[in-house]
Image (cartoon, rainbow over all chains, first blue to last red; front, side):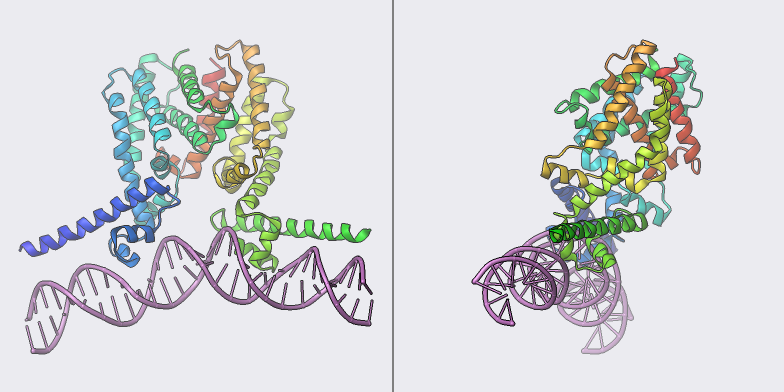
Amino acid sequence: MGLAERKEREKAELKEMILQAAKKIMLKHGQEGLSIRKIANDIEYSPATIYLYFKDKDEILHELMELGFLKMNKYMTAAFAEGDAVQRIYLIGEAYINFGLENKDWYDLMFSSDKPMKHIEKCREDWDQGMMMFDFLANTCKEAIDRLSLKSQDERILALQLWSCVHGLVMLAHSERIEIVEPNQKETLIKKTLDCMLVSIFDK
Amino acid sequence: MGLAERKEREKAELKEMILQAAKKIMLKHGQEGLSIRKIANDIEYSPATIYLYFKDKDEILHELMELGFLKMNKYMTAAFAEGDAVQRIYLIGEAYINFGLENKDWYDLMFSSDKPMKHIEKCREDWDQGMMMFDFLANTCKEAIDRLSLKSQDERILALQLWSCVHGLVMLAHSERIEIVEPNQKETLIKKTLDCMLVSIFDK
DNA sequence: TTTGCATACTAAACAGTGTTTAGTATATTT
DNA sequence: AAATATACTAAACACTGTTTAGTATGCAAA
């Protein structure tokens, strides 16, 4: 019965080819420049073939999004290993911002675009990996609240506060709005601002 | 010489018609659903005519963006009138978030989409109204820093910190990512988080 | 009044987009 | 060998922004 298995493997291989082509095109031409027809052209199949492997474009974007989380995890390794909760929050913040700044297209897919999320709606799946990330942050916040006996009781509110701060910073950087604060100082501004955020919460 | 004037007035009127149609369509079908052809259809002219009044679609989005700032100013009236700097920051924060939550499409145009900004690049204009808003916030921050003698010396960093916080919160709400913290609690979560943000900075 | 010209506008085309349908080869099973 | 299932695609549909070439209309000078 090796035949059915071979067929299945070949199906999986073409699916993977589509995904790899999509990734390549997105990294070269951005999320806006990614089209079904470009993918089809790249893998030398017709556009209609893509739809035998993916329901629609949103599903492709959703699978790319999941690859993005794998990439982000690599930025987080130092943070995951840190024992001290407060120090861990600092490391998470830095890693999050570094990832966001260095991987605009991945970041937008994971945290900004609503297209991969539309696929979730259609399929009633969850935003698994994002949820895991948030829970990890919230747990770290709980540790920090206990250790520093902070006024803030709710660790999920504190986690949302931290997330909003860094998300806002990354988004302003991406959309070039940060340039108006001080031109050509993006990197420095972001580092300073992140520091102020964390200090104002933990280092009073 | 009333003729030339009448002609000019008629040109301005059609330009305004285009803009009003664009606004109407954007509010009904969102920014994604706004197309040159829909505008043309609405005002009963051909799509090509639009290009006699606007360079491209980005210029239309840019002019809509400026209308958005007028709308936002209405939310800010109470904040503008407030005498106390710290209280003013609280009011600005609330107004900003209310505007953002109640006017997703306007907000995206003003603070997230890069399309109206592309027009700025092409024309070497500035992001005037956004800049004015930021300066107003920064000036208020300077007052607050002086009055509370806060550690934070740089009012523009503090302003960026505040802006990032509320911008991040609004963007997470728009992209439904906030749902994962606690489903169907969006409004409450945002209010609580905004409060924590401001308290952690000013009320230590 | 007639000619000439600028203005205002548009039909149609170009080059894209996501997606669907109907049909064709190829390979497997009966 | 015939029937069937699989894998794939050409072509179409309904859109998108934008450009080009051409057509009326109205005004001004001859």
